[in-house]
Image 1 (spheres, rainbow, N blue to C red):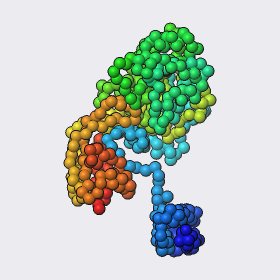
Image 2: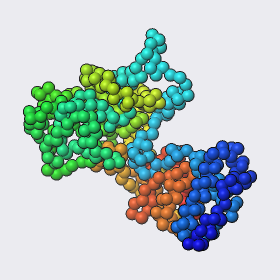
Image 3: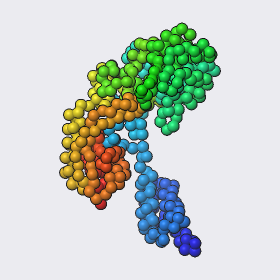
Image 4: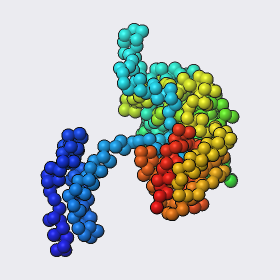
Length: 467
């Protein structure tokens, strides 16, 4: 204890370190408050290390200044930054889901750096609707009466149930009360709307009669259908289709709301997996309201998109909650640009990154793997590599049973554990690489690595494999 107290008393004061020329120069470049914060953080870390019994000596003052400068530089680096997605998961939720198309990025830049006619009608000089343009596009693309957009799909569900079922019942199958990312559960979101959740059926089997009984015995307003986009139930199962649900709703005067999650706008045959109903098909089946995400299969920005009957959409548009959940101008610009690409389905498939990654042919993926492997060899990385066939999920809670074919460069470091290499790649500068480990090898899946990212990946592998 006496030794610890002696060390603690020997820690130099912050103002002493701040007089070092290097830190004085940093203060002029970055501001005194930022430098002082970095120095205090470094001294606090040293103090904690002493109290844990780890530090046995006080580092020289020049070393403390250098550590504070490194801490300052780390603090000045943007926390939200470009990473290489080498996992093969195109809609990786933790990595931001769908990257935007070039056209959407240009639109965001234009809207961000200039004034816009966000809520202004240039034709008449009066106030306009911020969402009108994207709503017109959505109606044209999907063949619906009306559309509305909010900031994410959970918000879309919340707004729909609040406007249409608050104080009344909303019937939903027990087998569809899913849990989504970060522990959030659909039932909790439904209940936050003020609707009374009426569970129907059993976990594995729900019949039309279950909904009919709920309609007869409860004061319902909504029949809610949730597409089980992040899991599949197999075996002795039964569910009620949107078309059947609509018939029941019409018989009892109830609104049918279908939450699709993924938001597939192209013909279902275009996608390299099955089981994700298209938005247009769900509307044709008669759903009164359809909602889905903007940053999943649509390949756009985060958004919650609501389509359906005009009178119901208008009730949502006029609800006070709509103001709290509205989209900002940058997301609207990205969404408009993305939807305009869908006016030509071939162009959408080629220019929207998420669609392109999901639908890239095997030969292209193999050629990219060959190119990346060659770069790693040229770097002289201390490892062995091979090109292997892999299976990859779609991600984003879409097509959970689908595993798409692809190619990866499998890396086995010579002088360290593969887990160490994986951690070093995540810490790579200036461009972190997020990969996955399978069967004792680190896999660099080329489905989600761009050609222009390959040189940085190869350099990171070389640095990461160094002893």
